[in-house]
Image 1 (cartoon, helix red, strand yellow):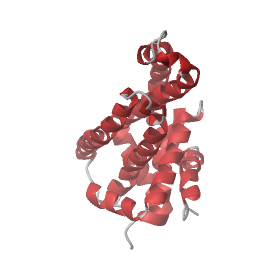
Image 2 (tube, one colour):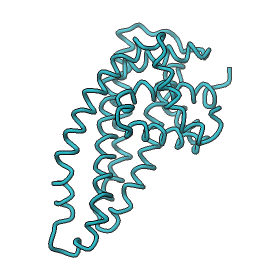
Image 3 (cartoon, one colour):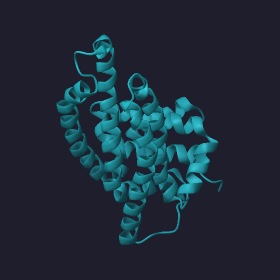
Image 4 (cartoon, one colour):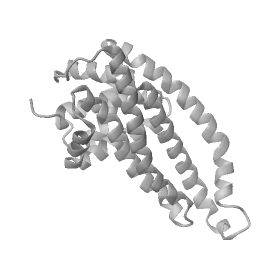
Length: 240
């Protein structure tokens, strides 16, 4: 059951099993292909630029030499976290029309009533517009946290702050698919999340861990959409 932060944390992994079922595979195929392309590009960028980026923040020959041994792995992890979250946000904008269809199918399978039917063309246009709106929402909250990475000393704890903020933003990102499939607006979705903050944070942390897990992260978008539908159906949806 998804009645605790730990249960919410497991929701994306339950979603991973769900999208592997034959009745959901065709809805998950395109987001899966998109993830493979994006994570391949992200991995190449992160591992080719991480060393240069860290050396620029902590140049050799100064007081940084005393903390470089500790800061290097911390900042490398931070670079990977930022890269993964950034590529995930961009990937969700592109995959939004397909993720919407997956959310509708999963919720229907769970027995949750959907919103009014929307023609395919109008649905694609709405999904892309909502995706861009969500991207702005995420960016406007994430950028202030990213500035912490530029403050000497503070940048050592910035990855932990980023993980918490990123977990919340990932929950906002994926729960919107389930909420939208039932005709619940963005404002009402966030109100329901604020009433259940630990569940939302637990779910977002699960998405983050899934996103950072090699191989499994290739299916992170469809699995997280399905996991969000499970959490929404069991804990957050409006009463029938």
